[in-house]
Length: 114
Image 1 (cartoon, one colour):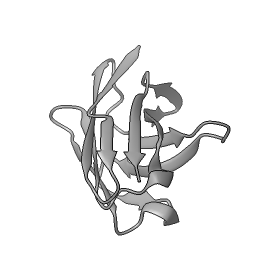
Image 2: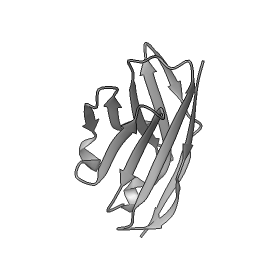
Image 3: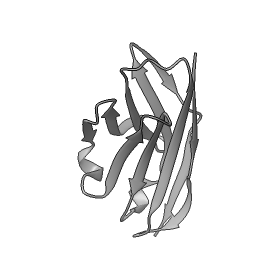
Image 4: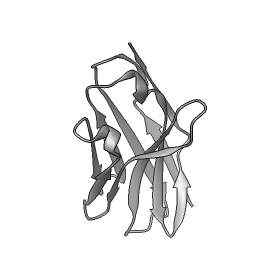
């Protein structure tokens, strides 16, 4: 079993920055991908960014150049550095771990005011 705990969400003005963290614990497969998804009210959950255990990363077009995903394999933690935030980035952000099976965190709210 794998547990994911997110932290770092909050309220920020447009143009500001936030850093999300997600710590994984439990029986974590060595080869895995971790990512961040988000879901805004009335919208489907969408992939924001993902990173594999060997460091390969991918981003949604809407966040390229503004968000950076990174991970610390020794700490089983993934980070999402979010800069130049826009009101449309407002959503609940979920951490995800994929290794055959998929696990989700409980989500953390990010609100960007205009």
